Structures are given as C-alpha cells and as structure tokens.
Length: 285
Image 1 (cartoon, rainbow, N blue to C red):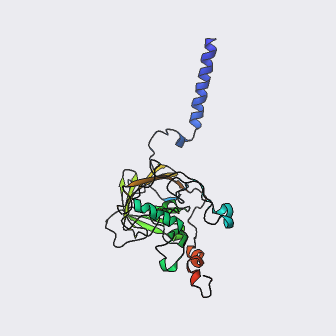
Image 2: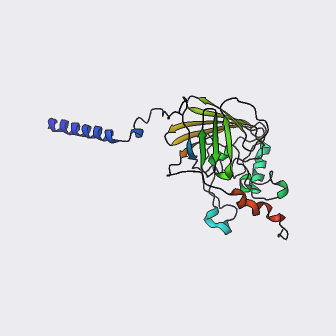
Image 3: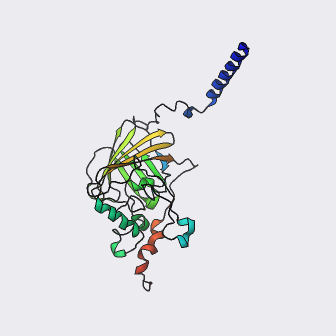
C-alpha cells in the first residue's frame, strides 16, 4: 500500500515538473524584479513604444459614481460618465485649500460653457481642443508614443497632436510658460524621473473640474514592470491651490495591435463650430 502511495506521489511530482517546464517564462519567478531591455548603447531601460492608460481618471482622478453626463436626453448612454476609483495614492481626495474647493465646483458646473471672449479661462480646456497639460495627457483615452534617445525623450500624444520633449541633458529652467510645461529628466535606476515646471495654469486635471495654478510642480516617475506595462506616478505640488503635495499612480499598457500607431485626430475641425459658432453672422444667441 505504501509503495503505491509513494508511486502516486512521485507520478504527480513528475507531472508538475513537466508542466512547469512548459509554462511561459515570463510567468515564472513573478516575485523577481523585472529587468527591462536596455536602450541600445545605454544602461537605461528601453521605453520606446505606444502606450495607453485604461482607467477612468480622465473623467475624475478621485472616486466617482456613474453619471448620466451633460446631455442625457440627447446622447443616452453614449454620454455616460463611468464609475471609477481614485488614482490618488491611498485612495484619498485632492488636498485643496478651502477656496479651491469652491472653484472646482464652479469649474464643473461651467465645464461646457463657451465664451469666445474667455476662451482660455472658462470651461474645460479639453472640450475646446486645448493642450491637455501634464499629467492629464497621460491618462486621456487616447494612446501616446514614447520615442527615446540618450539625450532627449519625445512623447507624442494622439489627442490634438500634442507633444513634449523630456530633456535628459543640459537641464535649464523653463524659458516661458507652456500648456505642457517644461520637462527635465534623469534616471534613478530603472525609473525615469521627470521634473515638470513652467505651466501656464490654464489646464485641468480631468473633466470634473480638478485644477491647478501656474505654480504647479509635477514630478513623474515611470518604471517598466513587465514587457508590456509601465507604472506611472506623478506627484503634484502647488502651494497656491493645495495644502500639501499629493500623488497619483496607475499602470500604462503597451498597445500590441499589429502595426499599432498614432492616428490622425482632427481636433480643430471638430470643435470649430463649438468654439466660434456664436460669432457667425446670423447665428442664434
């Protein structure tokens, strides 16, 4: 009897070893730290590729319930805002100063307000085809491409053909204020750390009206965690709006479709009537 038991155990062990030998290599040793391929001629990870965030931070970086959207009788479920969880580390909320909470509420209520005389300061900039800013550009529902060299990293976004350059050498302060800020980068091990300043204070963080001022300082940390995933973190500091720095975190996913590429997004053509329709002669007020 004992011999039969030993034989059965041995057979099971052999089968397990055989199956383990057939298991995909990338699923083994999951406790080990992932070592990304190196950019040719450098000791740094190769981040080249097309990436996309798949969460709901685009609608609201904080916890949010499902919402019918601004035009439910016209759009039905097409205009629905999906429920989503906070991407703020710790699952908390943005540490706004008291006055800024009221400003966020006003932003949300007037998010689709269109006044050509207040084009840059009223309503959601995304709706008007403005540059999305950082970190919002990262989690828009559109892909973006990282093009990496030793001295510079170009990030091209499908939305509105937005782009920015991360300067890896010869760091200087922002010469002027920008919609996308001014990015200086360096490596800390396998993590790309990007220091972003020089904002114009006109971008939002999401469609919920979360915002910042021109004093915003963002530190991004981008770390490869698998062949097809990056972990993205951004710490936001703005003494004009927040009571303390706060951090968001989310995974980014590599687009694996055959011939994946950024496609044309003719943003200006889409919003022309929305922005300037009231200025057309004979237009209804």
